[in-house]
Length: 330
Image (cartoon, helix red, strand yellow):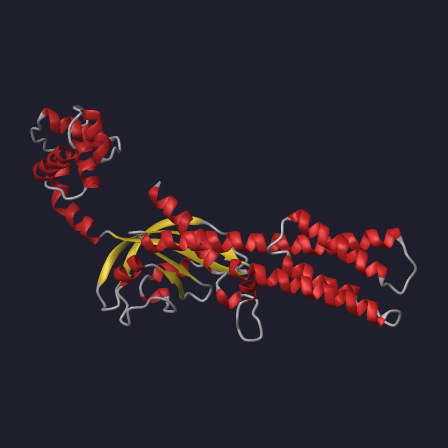
């Protein structure tokens, strides 16, 4: 369940990561267009938009009856929409429509005024919703990227070419690239089987897990459990994965394999049996301590005794031994 949750997080984080700077609209100087609607620019943008509206109205009045500038009201309304509530956007659209009608070359028309107000307000409301959605997306992106970076599990995403697009510190530590950076390197160099799991754009998307051989940047190999999910970003197929090194666990399992098969049962104390029973049920140390009315350190001490008696080093192997040898007692 934890792996599935982390995988969903990785998939969402990688999807949001695709919205980073290279795909943004940019101003002529290379500054992302969305910077205009940062909170620090609120007062400046509102003043500028008010001034633009006044200038357009003055130009309309000055040039009447030769030319009309009513269409230009879309610019200040769109700019101001990022900072105004919906009712203020609608009111601004109505005011601009009144100005446009006052200095229009045509005769007064209530119908035309209504449609102009609807068009201007509608454009402003549409711009406002797009900006709100964009802000929410960036906020969620930042939060999930933070969660991925802090995750102890190795998480990576792969683009349609098979190159690593996003990787957290745990993934970098696990695969140990020579230059210390996984971004932009081919996943086939570390997990060849994962490269083959990448689907073409027209192939069905899926979630799966596998155990495969992995390779570190220094040439060392390790056995990896991989949970991965394919997804699409537009028409481009992508993949998000959680990688866990289980080499130590496999090595620890080898010496106890014979004991497990022989079902050798070593005598356990009453406390050890109770702790083992709760461990099989999936309870954490703190929950076991609460249920038994003892300290968490006492639970840890009992677990260490169980590790010594059963000759295993991980909780998962201890559960396996418990189910094989002590099922009747549990």
